[in-house]
Amino acid sequence: MIRLVKFEKEMHEQLISWVESEEDLMLFAGPKFTFPLTSEQLNASLANEQRFAFQVIDSDTNLPIGHCEIYLTDETAVLGSILIGHKSYRDKGFGKAIIIALLEYIKLNIDRPKIELNVFDFNHNAIKCYEKVGFRINQDKKSEISFKNKIWILLNMRIE
Image 1 (cartoon, rainbow, N blue to C red):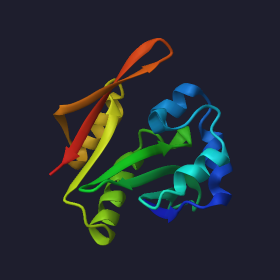
Image 2: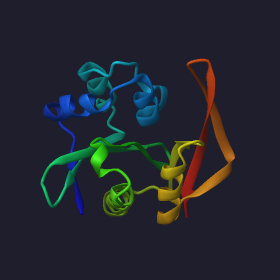
Image 3: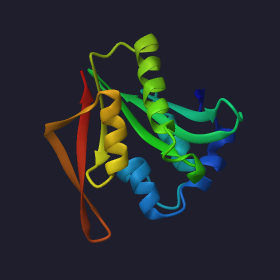
Image 4: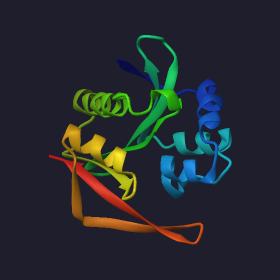
């Protein structure tokens, strides 16, 4: 269904084109970047050797359809910056395929005892997707982000 390809500089413009608003950027990457997303911001983020970024390719059409990342802490591999850029590919199972591909990559290439991700509490489709793969909400770990005079609740999910 999909394959992950190492995210390179020539892929920046495609990713940037998918992030059309401040809200899109916050949903995609949290407060890590400022809108509009730029190649300079991406370069700075990817300079971190603990971050692995991928372009998501539709195996049938060979077209880029999304983006995803893994970043590492001392004990944890964290899935993040998951975006299905082409709206026509949303709600078709690609999110689940991306998560499974990331978990497989971690299993084969990264030694971390814990795997987790963060998601905003109102992003019900994403939460359902992550639960289908086996992630569960970690009730002990959540945070708040102030965005446009609103408080967004960021949930932590982990897989055993």
